[in-house]
Length: 313
Image (tube, rainbow, N blue to C red; front, side, top):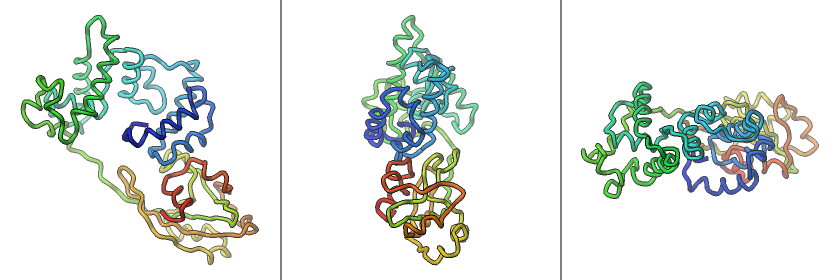
C-alpha cells in the first residue's frame, strides 16, 4: 500500500484490510472483488491484484510460508528487486541491498553519485555501490534489519527531496553532498515522464429501484479488475451502443477531470434512467445489473463511486 502512496493516506485502508484479511490464508481464499472492494479509492489497483495473486502463489507453491530469500521473493507477483530485498533483509536478515526512491536519494548524496539515473547502466552501478556498503561483520544477519530500516527511514524523514534536514543527519560528516552544500542536486535524472491526457465517455444506466449496469474492467489496463460504468472512446460510440428507443432519454452530465499519476482523464458521463420494466431491454456483451445493496460494496474507481453515490463527480 505504501508504494507511491503516503502513510497518512494508507492508515485507514490498512486497518480495514488487515481486519478483513488477518493472515495470508484469508487473503488467498478471498475473491478478487472482495480485495478490490477494500482497496477502492486507494489507486494503483495493480498492487491489489498482485497482492492477492501473491498470497495465492505462496499458499500453493510454498505451503503458505513466505520465501526467505530475495531471489525467491522476486519471482512472486508484484514484488520487484528492491521490495524483495527489503522483505528478505528486514524479516529474514539476508545481507542484500535495497534501492527504493528514498535510498537512492540517500546514497547518491552520501557518495556524491552524480551519474544520470535515467540510464540503466548507472542504476546498476548504484546497486553495486549499495551492496558494497552493507554490514559485513560476523553479525551482519543480525544488523541487516536495522540497517535496511534505517536507510529507508533516513530518506523518509531526514534526507528529504526538498529542504533536507542536514544539520540533524547522523551521516552528515561522511556525506559528499552536505560537504559540497548542494544536496538537492542529487539524485540526477534527466529523463522525466511526460503527462498525457485521455477523454472517455461514461454510460450511467440506472433503474428506478437503484440497479446500475456495471462492467468489470479487463486487466491489465486502466482500472483493471474494477467494476465500472461502461467506457467509450467517443460520444457516438456510447450512443450507438444503446437501442434506438433508449437514446432519446440520454442526458449529458457535467464533464470532469480525474488526475492519475501521469495522465489526466477527461470524463464525460451520460445518464440513462429506466423503469424497472425497461431494464430487460438493456442487454450488453459485458457486465451485468448490480443491485443497490450490492454495487456500493464492489471494487470501483474512486471517481465512479463518487458519481454514483452523490450524482456529481
